[in-house]
Image 1: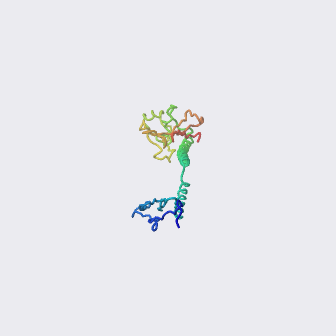
Image 2 (image 1 turned 90 degrees about the horizontal axis):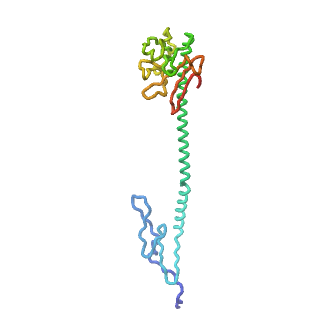
Length: 261
């Protein structure tokens, strides 16, 4: 029986698709890379995931080729993997927030370190101040008056306090001139400061033969920092004396005196 003209016909089968329609991808030995597929047979185009689909039209018909379900599952898995990676990614705003938090924490750490350094300096100077105060009080108890100072108010750092407390009496005239006194009042030569450490005294930077009580912090470059002492005209303790140290710590002047902490 003759087939009516113009009727639709089924798409012709492609000989190349009879066997091996879905080619197996190959990989290069020794390398981890994306699979490489062999060239598509004649008349075919490669679909996703290595599936070859014939794009051939037969007269009077529309051929439809469906991608196998296995390929569709692989496409879904790949999309899910990409979506999962996108969920764990950081946005620019999140990165800026993290950087701001790190900068804030770094500033806090630096600030706390500076505060700890200032506290350490003040603590040590307070201990040394109390030791000197104890020696001065012993001197006052023995003689009935406080050790003499340099009468020049601008030279409170050049006082004869070391000589008065340690009982060093053999002081030359040039040294006495620098200290602003005619002689040492500790005529008995008694040592009221026996626990004075070797690092607690030393020569003045301008007058190498004059010994001073040293402050372990805040010394200028190539110089020394000394304890300041006023007994003739004290500003704070008007009935006794003023003893203090000035030390530059973390860019701020720290004053440790016997009138305040």
